[in-house]
Image 1 (cartoon, protein in one colour):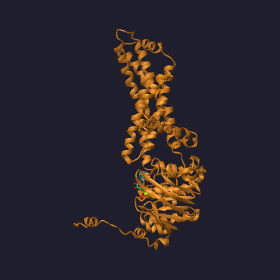
Image 2: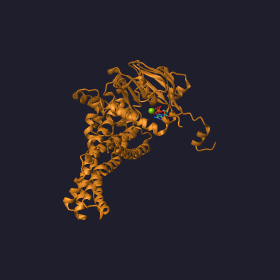
Image 3: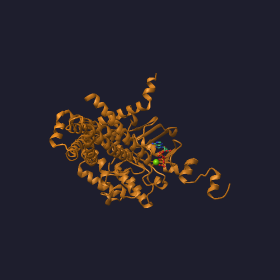
Length: 253
Length: 256
Ligand SMILES: Nc1ncnc2c1ncn2[C@@H]1O[C@H](COP(=O)(O)OP(=O)(O)OP(=O)(O)O)[C@@H](O)[C@H]1O
Ligand SMILES: [Mg+2]
């Protein structure tokens, strides 16, 4: 049996503990609204609005491929209007949030870790602290809030485009009628299909930005250190998304 | 008053400070000398809580820095200006915004903030750089912006980490005069880290030399100039010590 103390000191346990303390520090910094308030909009633009093109690009092709795949799967066995069901459900529940999350883990997570990491190794974070700022309130909170608010927005746009792409693919390449696709889309539709995906997206946004900030602030050792932490931010961000995805499936479905 | 009491600090197994004790009297400028890598920057980072001692303590106005809670530390930091060795300017902001950031935090009036920004940049001779970005400035100009950012706060204490290194002699002299003026007009207590002996003699009321993790000697400028401690003498006179005769031979191109 592993001794409890050794378990506590093991690398993953220490990482989880470190992440917990960090998240608590960030939560405490929420009180300092005078610091993060003015920075929030700019971060929402940088992390959210600027991520829209990549998310839409992915959604477009996902919608097309899903429609083609479901036709291939259903041919002969299942009424063809189920193409609409599969495209809608798959994009709303899973592919919209997760693929968008993955793309943003790359774009947003790397961006945050590289920026804060560079500030760390050039002592800009220290300078911020000597000016009596809380680094969590100034650097972490605006990014995490922006991620939590904007990931669902970007995901919603991606879902809308993905379903639309599936619709036009079905009409033009698969000989479905508009009515058939819409029938399939509506037949098992629940309101939960929408909010489930968006709740997931919000949790992905919080995780990716928190991890990016944590890796950035933990950076040491010059340009190589920044590169290493940036990579870790993307890898851990993607892993966190997959784990959270499974977690929500267990808890909410 | 800033007081170091038997401060120990190591990174891994590399001991940097080994029981350093020093008092920095109120209203005076104390110069901290020492070889490159001897731990001067590490020493002053303890004053603002950027580093915490492994043992011993640093006190500012009788508050032990590493025992302060977050509010206490923030309050302490708002009394201290820090000039970073490599300027540490915020590179995503203009020079003006670099100066403004600390002033905004202190909740000053916008008019007052603008006045201080312009005045501080004028004092370091960089009036025309307010709207430029740090990447567009030379190393020496960045350094001076770092000085301006600290003095704009009009703090009670200022810690200057090599404020004149890398500046031309005339600009160095300007910064020296500025540090003296700041002390005279604001009554600021300062620690100045420097290798520049001319600057040390000009701005220092007292001089301390850091050597092997401790203060080797501390005294008035005159006491230091007249010291008979061989380590201090060697440093202030800038005599080289190639202790290994093979090195000397290698450099002169001959064989040992
Ligand atoms: N964060 C850190 N991690 C590990 N080692 C460090 C760290 N900071 C400083 N050191 C080590 O501590 C020693 C003292 O560094 P410090 O920067 O205080 O020197 P210094 O006296 O300011 O030198 P210089 O005059 O060249 O600026 C060096 O050997 C340095 O490698
Ligand atoms: Mg130094």
